[in-house]
Image (tube, rainbow, N blue to C red):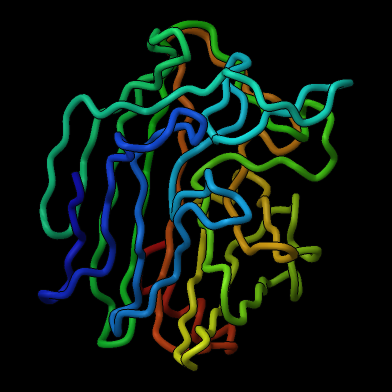
Length: 276
């Protein structure tokens, strides 16, 4: 099942349940394609380099030892392993309008047991003729004792990925910048109020995405070598432990603009207009 977020009659993002995905991709609902108002696609789904990257999705690599990210699992002292340990996110209820998706999800482990229940809200709204804003907010409630970790926590330096992860297109020119400097090295594993990712497609069209995590609570995972992707990463350097009933809040705000924008004042101004 696919639903679209629509602004002024034009689809700007498609939301897919992921029900038809193979188990080793950690099936989950995700947004793809996410587009500028002029139609430029700014996400990648199942790219050749990482088949488990699904546009914009909430994914983590280790929940009680099970993989909700997809692909291989990293184990301390053993390295990256192709394990049969993939979980999935299953929709229980959903309410969809042109500009909002409200959903209740069960995170099921490989045995089919519910480990986490999630309340998810995704909204879109126009800012002007060349930009729109996206907000993704999720509450993850532990149904049993839960330990959320990352490959970095499990012994792979720099691999703290996991959270509301945006995978950018794998063809064309893409650059990352932030208030801390240009490139992934300037921001990776650090906190910042925003990250801007500029992308130019092979046909010359370009778009800019400004990402923010309200509150700047978590360090960012950012990569711009081999592929471009980023997310606020709650388990970047330490595991998150939840007792039954405890909640982990995950949130990502984005402003999606047509054009290649480098002016920090313009970018932060759009964030202010978006309320991020």
